[in-house]
Image (tube, rainbow, N blue to C red; front, side, top):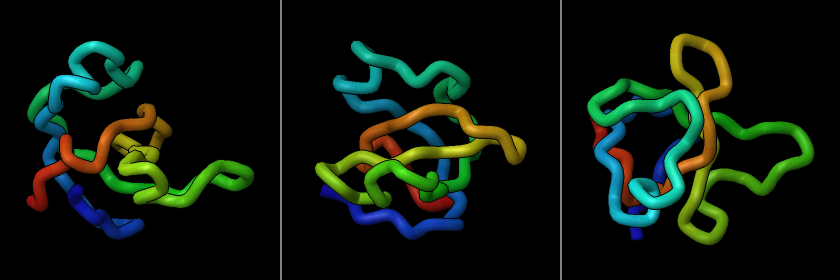
Length: 69
C-alpha cells in the first residue's frame, strides 16, 4: 500500500477500485494535492485520502492511485 504525504503533489492514475467508484472531479493524469479535511479521517487511513485539484476539493481516492510527480 502506498503512503502519501499531506500537501504532496501526485499524478492520478486510477487503480480498479477508483475506476469502479470514481472521484467526482478528477480525471486520469490530473495533478492533485493530498489534503486533510476537518472531521474526516486523515490521509492513509484504510489506504485512502482526500485530494484537491486547483485548490478545490476533488474527491477521495485510493493511495495506490497516486504517483509522485
